[in-house]
Length: 240
Image (tube, rainbow, N blue to C red):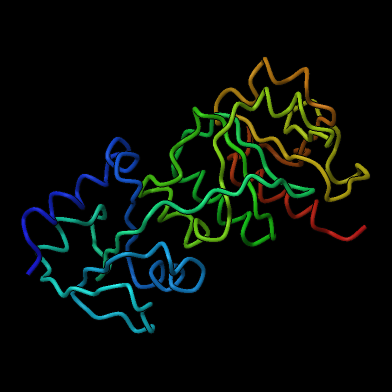
């Protein structure tokens, strides 16, 4: 049976302070564990669950059967999903592709997780984020990413410094930008998405080379940042 010390340790990974200290985070549910086995097997360390894992586990990964009570104690979910696994932080890649996303102070974990999921869907393998952006290993981010945390690299940087030292176009999501549906674009550059309430920071605005917007056809006040990201990525991915 799982020990009290193990429960205490896994519960500590619910908090960023201890995740950073131990360089580990947790994932939950059969689907997330299957994604980790497929895309990042070396990061997967140990699985605890009320049911065994269907996929073939890497040799170094141990499965420990636990009861429903223990699962509830280590899970972050209101309704735990049969399995919880401990993973090590993913390796960082600093090589920049021709097209990637920059996130300026995205604070909602659900939005960040959804953007990771969108990036994976549209083949965007790299994201840079301001240091004020939500922690990508926050359990809510990991869960919302639906496994994309394992195949999209996210790097926390000083965005101003990055923008000042790039030769790529900076496509900034702005209300007064050029219509994304009529702008002649190529999938080369950095798509900059701003904070949910305040948009792109004032110190970054002068560095934006290509302001873009999604025109409004109805009566809505605004788009959720993850929704807007999906529209932009769709347009950048569409052959022209």
